[in-house]
Length: 168
Length: 168
DNA sequence: TACGGATAGTTGCATTTGCAAATAATCACC
DNA sequence: GGTGATTATTTGCAAATGCAACTATCCGTA
Image (cartoon, rainbow over all chains, first blue to last red; front, top):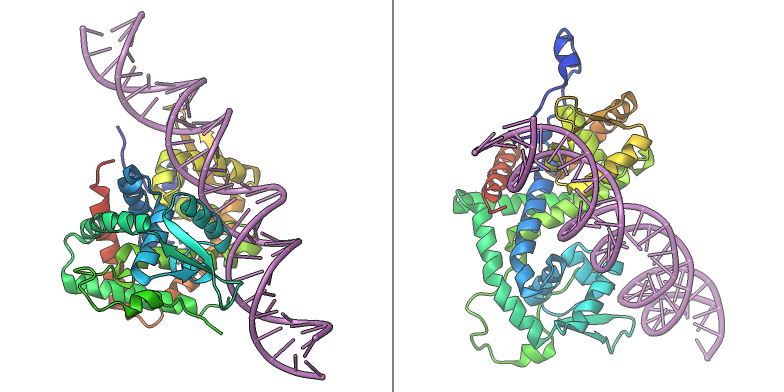
């Protein structure tokens, strides 16, 4: 019965003398993008399952959360807010309109723009899921002191800002 | 010319008297899963583009990184290591075999298992990309002191452990 | 007012994804 | 040693994804 992924090369490498293989090995467990990605994935899978009984998919929750927290948005802003590609989002919003979760209106001033907003149904579901969201956040942060959590959030915001300066 | 997503409800809500709308609003910018997800996405998009010229997709890099850092793995362990679903990974590894990046052998002891390992070509590409990976990590961490970064990694590991305790 | 370029959103299309079912091999237990 | 449960991987299939091309609208300038 095996459980955790094992490290180390196969037997062949183990018999090789400890010559200077590489000046510095690549340590996955200390690699920030890896640490971020695995936490994000776990969180997404776990929370996605938690909200599935409400008939809401994770991406839909992300839209609801963005709109519920920040009010009506145009598609581009919503894409930035949710990290979802606009073309994907366009179709996702279409589905959510059919589910009566959001409304989509052409903007009067600039009729290229579309304004996406929660419907009453969307509001209701949003408010229903928020406590669940908070619960999962708490689970994630279990054992971290409040000021640690605050520092964590701060660092993530700084990192995001750093990445925002990258070309395109 | 507009750039950042705007907050706030529409004009209708703005005229509404400041009754107790909700005991506590949902603050997206302080919501950990949101902060994690946006950093993860940005990093993925930016780094994915950076390695594209090498003919390697992001998910392929994740496999290369896992194998390069931790040695040959069976599919299940590789899935855990990369946060990629096994069925997706099975096909991804198939492609990578065709690209001669990895080898896939049935395990002799337990012939249900498959062992995935880097080929020389895979090793070469892996070593080629590692410096890029380090560079992007540095960009992300720009302005964070080494001990801050260390604390960040630590917290992410603790959070991951917390999430690991969730049912299934 | 007409025109070229920019911006917002949608859609075509090929690829990727993930769940569930199928397959293959091992294990536990009698 | 045989049998049913368990484990590892693959595959069928429908849905989701993202790039590129397209449409519609707006903006600046002549």
